[in-house]
Image (cartoon, rainbow, N blue to C red):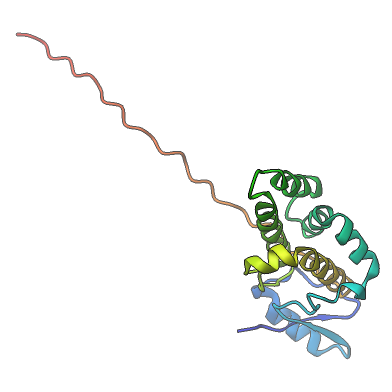
Length: 176
């Protein structure tokens, strides 16, 4: 099921969530010009040359582009994300696969902040088309920001308390 969300041109709608889709739809119906966004990407995976600047940036430094997208989506720091992806590359034997997996997770997290639920679900896409996926996300962020859509705030994580270990108590028996 794909929900269509509307952002009126020139407006600054609230965060893009399921709760606000009705508000956005009602508000957009009164507007003459509205841009429709779904929970899927509106950009093509291989449309890298649609924005040559993003394409060059993504080609020469994919971890930096992924980090920038994560930071623009409010889901983390650019330097932290890029550093984690770069560090994964140096793990012996499986480094590139770990880096692709880490980049895919970061891309999915940033995309969800803009209401995109379409994930990079397959390993070959993350490994062989990771740069294209990072460029597509950045183009999508630019397009949605230009339409006035802001990212949703990061979700709060509930912390589970650490398990407690039961320590047996010594029982002292008084002699009578």
